[in-house]
Image: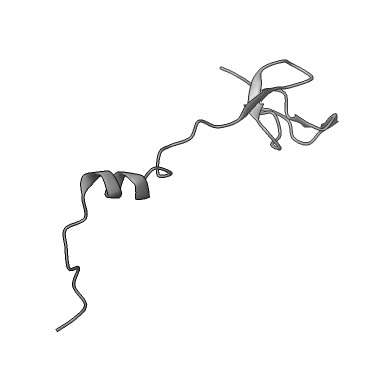
Length: 62
């Protein structure tokens, strides 16, 4: 026989354990070049710059 719980875990205790399982919104900052929101520590998908340098050419919009 394996290890089994002696008592049922209450909803309150279960909720306390899962309190940090919620989804978090991504941290967005304004790009210093084009002022569009971008992920922190990532290159801007709109203009392709990161820390003042051009790191890639953005795709042309249709």
